[in-house]
Structures are given as C-alpha cells and as structure tokens.
Amino acid sequence: MEPTRPPRTGDEKATLLGYLDNQRATLVEKVAGLTDAQAKWSPVPTGTSLFGLLAHLTMTERWWFSAVVADLDPELPWSDEFPDADWDGPPGATLADIVAGYEEECSRSRVIMAGVDLDTRTSTRHASHERNVRDVVVHMVEETARHAGHADILRELIDGSVGV
Image (cartoon, rainbow, N blue to C red):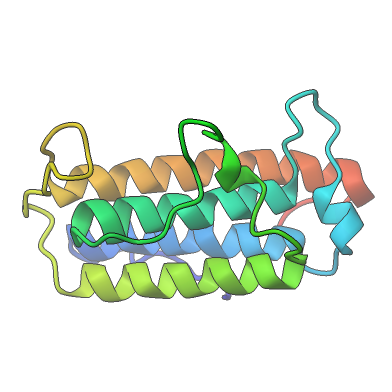
C-alpha cells in the first residue's frame, strides 16, 4: 500500500475515501523495515504498540465496513471476557502477517464501499443505532488518522524515523 494524495477536485465520496486510503498507507509505511520485536515494543503503560495499532485497525475496518455497512457477520476477536483482544492480533502472528491482514481488510472495505452510496442507511443489527454510511467513513478517517499520529510517535521512539 503506497501513500497517495487524496483527490483535490473529487466528489465527496472520492475525497473521503482518498483521505482514508492515505491514512491507511501511512500506517503501513510506519512499520516498514521493523522487526517483530520493534513493532511489538511499547513505551506506555497501556501496551500500545505499532503491531497492536495495525491489529486493532484491521478489526476496526472489519467491524465498520463488513459488519455495519455490509451487514455481514465477520469473525471478530473481542468478547465480554476479552474486550480489547483486537489489539493483540492473532496468536503467533508476525508483523508481516498483521500488515497483510490489514491490507486485505482495507481491500475488502474498498470493495464494499464501491457499491454503496454515502447516504445509505446502515443496519442496526450490529450497531447500536442507525447511521448513514457517510458517518462510518468520516469516523474511519478520524480513527485511522488518530492512530497514524500514535504511530508517528511510536516509530520516532523506536528508531528516530520521522515523516512518511
């Protein structure tokens, strides 16, 4: 996944999805060249790591686009007993596995979004209340960009790398 400039003259959907794709690519770029140990390293008490950020965002993509927008029943790792299991990634996963899984999930989200209008109402089967797809996309831009900011800081602490 390569960072791309969002369209400057696109329609609303193309612009929003362009910004989302840019943030997705930024996150993948932030882990490029790291070892598994570096990606799993955390300087904070919560245990937040680059590995965990990508694992979490993979499931966030799956939840919002596959479950909420497409009204599917995707496999999700969290439960009442383990509400933050999405931050751990699959047992035994490597950084390469997490990156591949994230890229695959983002591709799935793009396919879902190709056939959906921003004004489409989502099902309430998975989400607690109805919303339109626009709200989901804006939320995902915000969520992904927020974690890209965390990734900037974590990567700088790991090896001094800054920028994309």
